Length: 172
Image 1: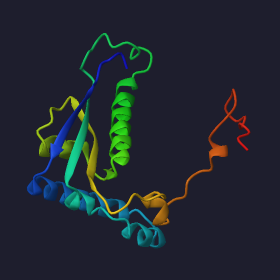
Image 2: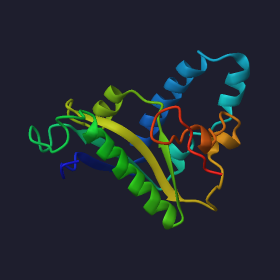
Image 3: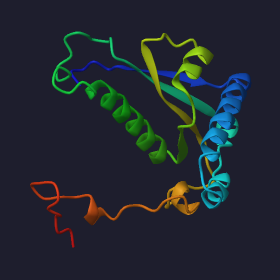
């Protein structure tokens, strides 16, 4: 938005840093697991996070809302537009990785404050994603969470509307 480029990328290769993050993620996963029913917890326990330790590199993507401020085109009306720009940068990285036959996974079990401390990120900069990136034997056609029976995708016909909310677009 407004050519603000509010992102930074921190490339992580240090096993010590990865291990510190992995331990934090394990703790956060346990906190989440404790909130689940026994059945959901059984399903959840099969979802892997070993990519944190196994990936060739990890990339932490951050959002700096002060970059280009206060005159960022478009952000006066949509305050989160800068954050959306960061998410688009992540998606572009994901698409490029996939095109090159690399795997990429987004880890979401962490506290922002923990990553700020671990990686010396200034307090006004938000860590948005820890991405695990590296070669894989093959690219899956079905998302990991769907294969693990955590959740299924919502049919396209349920999320695409015509002209107004609640007016499904006929996509048949």
